[in-house]
Length: 298
Length: 301
Image 1 (spheres, helix red, strand yellow):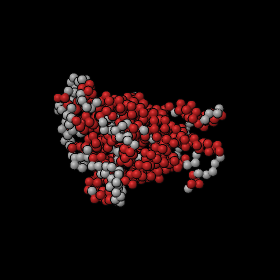
Image 2 (image 1 turned 90 degrees about the vertical axis):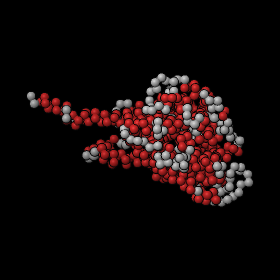
Image 3 (image 1 turned 45 degrees about the vertical axis):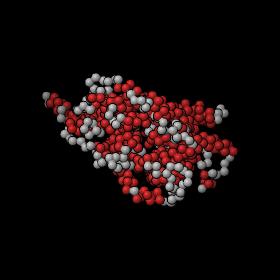
Image 4 (image 1 turned 120 degrees about the horizontal axis):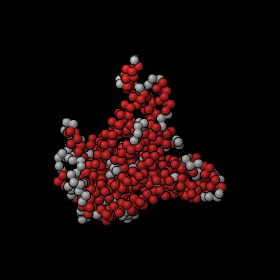
């Protein structure tokens, strides 16, 4: 007789005090925070896409509607081809060319340097590695004035060379990241290859590169996003319309029409963001591991 | 010094050393040509009356630096930079830590939320800066519309000299992705035993956070703060796309001041002086990171 109400009460008031109950409440609170923050984080995208799909007269409608009445898919081709001198096809092609070149350049030069720092003995190595670490945090913006002079001297202004040549000469952050990864490859593998008479070039190509695919993928993703979004360099070095990159094109679009054709501008902005979005979604795992390594395991 | 770094070695070691230098050669050339050379050149040019051409440069000593000290706008831009750096570091780090703790909870769906929270960081650039102009629109933007729904009349955001800097800081909170991930990895590295023994001692959640999590996380937190400071200097895209230093000079930060002097006013000698000052600040920060975070930076896991 007495057991029934006790059990009932346990389910009611005291339930919150049991381990299971406390756990359930903790999960609820966590989700009550996770979900709204997530919505806020994607809000800029929602605004971008929804504006891109509105007719002009609805862009300025108040109160703002998140879901357009009838999606205007025509905004995408209209924005893309709409204006004579901002040629998005050329800009996109330029961005793609520079990005792919820079990914390959970074991977090649950084793999070589990282292998040397991780696996080869040499006098002066510690000092040089200290320089890698010291320059790792230095943003390019601090060097832009003298580099501009340098590239001017080389006759490289208004070409893609100032953007496409330096990546073949290493990037401290990537060298550091790859070196950390190379350090974890077991010594026995190298010894076995050495007994077989393999030189360092072969060890690097046949053992390190295949084993480091995740790390290399991480770098490729970083490089893709960094170069695709890059704005400062292209704005500085490029003048003629036919050499511009996508971010610069977007800004010209903004300047040219006094911010009035918002629906078309957002349509083009959406297109510009899609490649980054795809790369991020498919490469997410590598991305997160790479960043965690840079900060903690370093 | 030289003997310390270059002791005598055997022939096979010398061969390995040659390969080492061959492999790092691209980086070494890049360091000299694209970094060290320009930095030294910049120092030299900051002592000249350089405007457009490099011919007939006059040595003018510290005049460019004196010009900076006398230019009220330079000091405004220093103040604005400090404002934004402090705001981004304080709010950005606290927010990143909050998100990292949230993502460290054992609930289903965490990888999904982690990706969503990271998303605005990878898409940071001109396209998204354009969207933010629209979000910040005082009359028609979604931000003030949302505030109105809960009974708040929103400020004019980037269109007001009081609110433009808080607006930029607010916007930067959407880009705390890397800091969040680094702190999350740091949280996951705190040994479980420490929490268990704290629980045995009767510590509550706050006490555990205060006495276990924070001290264990301090090196990571320090690293995050340093990279936040450095990245706060790099906000050129937002300034160029959204405010162009305005209204008035209220969002004129050092990088914009440098850009204007170099490529709009063509005062390249002055710009070189600004660039040199920025370079010294950034290197000092890296040095600080080295000294205080040394054990942990060099430690190979």
